Figure 1 (cartoon, one colour):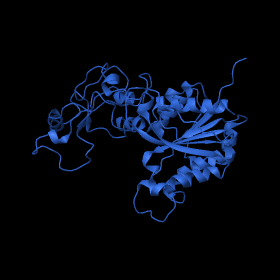
Figure 2 (spheres, rainbow, N blue to C red):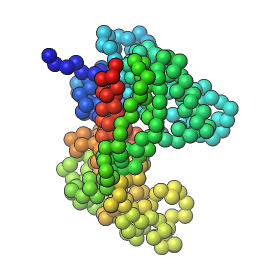
Figure 3 (tube, one colour):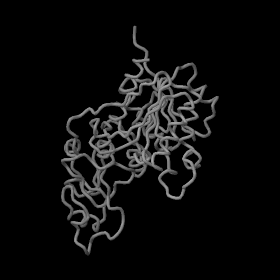
Length: 333
């Protein structure tokens, strides 16, 4: 008799990095939700058999949620709710949960309350862990404990799971069915480097295209090309002559990837971080590889949107490691 698949719902699904990791571990998608049109275009293309709801989650009412899941028992709800309030100064005295900028977190809690999955996984930026000396973290934990869940959170690093990138994220895992929470263990002895995953791609110059999906080089100005020509493998703006050197801006800009180390954290804007040996920024395809997306995963929409989709994603290999942890917990139910 065939083993029944574990079922999941993906909230704030974006391009689908979280979904891809869970699909690879043979979970079955019941439905996913996202509001961004181009992100949804990418998701639909890569997951044609998933049910995607393109809608503001705040407008997805409780009866719709119950209708969408029908008679399915949901094993896990996954998602990374966008949160701004905790990262902006000036909200002293206001609780994280009460900040209107974090209403999407409350929506995640609401869906968990309605669906009552066995488990949930909530992903967010690492600084949430220490925000307000841990008070925000405890506030989030308490919200789920009030729904009857045992909850723990840890900071995980994507590089520990075979992703060629140092990307630290806080992961909350909750269980309604027992009080033992399992987090994924480190899976690699040595970190995978940028060169390990990018060296076999076709070489490109500024503005050049290739036949590989999303492997199109950005067009850089002569001024920008001159600046980057001074920066060595793993080097930074200090190598640019003083008269040409950018005087202001993010210090993480105008650097070259270090070829023999994992990448810096991939974000929605990587235009001024350059290939370790070619004079250009990385293509969307290369950034996707740093996030552990396979080459047959195609990103849709404008180039800027594609970069945002890649940068906002949970790396699929990290998602897969989390899915394995959920499988282990389910075996102990």
